[in-house]
Image (cartoon, rainbow, N blue to C red; front, side, top):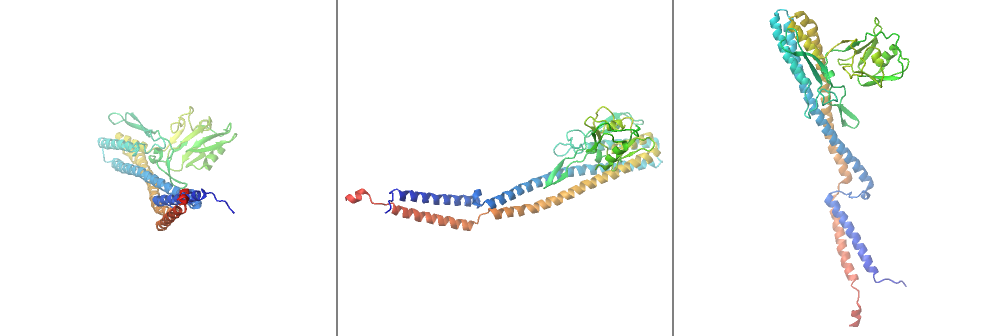
Length: 416
């Protein structure tokens, strides 16, 4: 014979009533949130996959914003460079007029005045800013004015003129991530975009007996090159050539000195690192720790200049009235400038084409990822409503049965 407490039916009815109320509340939450996973324990594997898909969706959106931002910056740079190309074409036309030998000195001076004004426009383009107030052509030194002007007197010209232009930015390139593990450059250093010729630096120091005194490093165009104790001039040149930089080193057979030459039109960016003095000892860099590109030794001979150097040379030749100088150095340098600018525009166009393709791919991937996530999380509303109604009917029936079962006889019932 088993003894049953008089409170046991009450406890049991309360327990199962609360349990059904909990199930109903869970179903209400799922229907309200339109998801079948309100807690991780509902479906751990689906929740894990959904979390991964949602992370990919967020990254997809971030990549899309990066692509949009980079394309805006590139479009600004491309527009400015196309404007610079138009200016160069006009300067070339003036140079051709000055080189035909039919103009007198006064007329050539007028051409020189127009070239000087166009030089000012080129400098304005080179020092332009993007939509965020950053200089487009200063490398990663985006708050530094990329090109510094030096004013002075020019024979044949009235008033102060621009006599030299120095690059004050750096060679760093900002990059934005546009896809998993893929980046694209945003900016373009000014000593690449506005350079005209391959640069050459000839040292005048005989290095035939030179030996590196201790282990140290140099940096060429942003790439570190490690040198060992006892390395000769030939070894130094070989290590520069083995590095992945657009600069080649060789030894002058006459002077026995080091020569650095770019393989594409840009300005060489050379540094001694960690207190080393290899490039200083070899006569490439000046002592004193100046920053590139203003650290080239005064004794070194430097060839190849910027677009501004070419335009200044042409302007000076026009002021001088020398059609011979205009037709030789002036126009030749201008042709190099136009060729390099066309290459820069081609590079920007290629980047924009890639970004356009990336934007289309991201636009296609987003709904696919959203669909995968929906398969894991979305709730079948018809099935959910059916389950909820079943729970409601069950709860009503249970409450009704409980009310009858708990309506037990009282002591007063027996005393009637």
